[in-house]
Amino acid sequence: MFLTGKVWGATATEQEARYPCDPLVAGPAEGWVRAVDVAAPPGLVFRWLRQLTLAPYSYDWIDVRGRKSPRTLVQGLPELALGQPFLVFEIASFETGTHITGVLPAQLAARHGQMAVSYTLTPLGAGCRLVVKVAAEAGGPLPRRLRRALLAWGDLIMMRKQLLTLKRLAERDAGL
Image 1 (tube, rainbow, N blue to C red):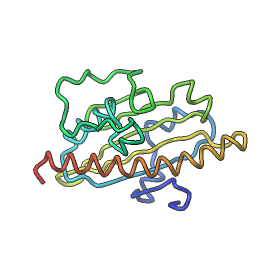
Image 2 (image 1 turned 135 degrees about the vertical axis):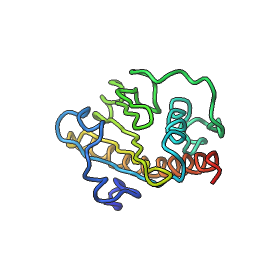
Image 3 (image 1 turned 120 degrees about the vertical axis):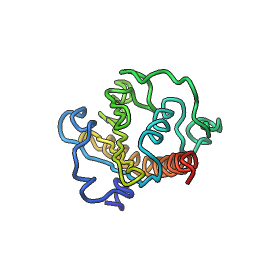
């Protein structure tokens, strides 16, 4: 699966599991799953996930033209809400401390096909496991399939950086 750009750090069980994003893509879908252990409590990591409503935490020079993602937790963030921007997605569901799930807005879905994402946290010892799944519409015309294959690779590169950045910041804040 690594050769397809669809998996990074996820176990076979995590790749096969169902996520809140899965029912948000109609018809056949493929999954891109990325995961990392974080030596910080799930509540703290979730606070960092909430900041994905502000900034991408990947390669800022690509995503936001060099504007640096905040390196401290922002106080007074608005409460999460359905429809709220979340990276390139809109929040479709969430459970505080457990997951944030988003769906691609209609304009982007028309170009790339339906896509949804779930950022999930599972307690693991004193820390947690952060698993992200992107569910992407499978099939479609050849140009869309090729674009999706390139997106999977681009997403792998960007999300790997994002997850490692969030891990580092959460572990720093946990004092580890």
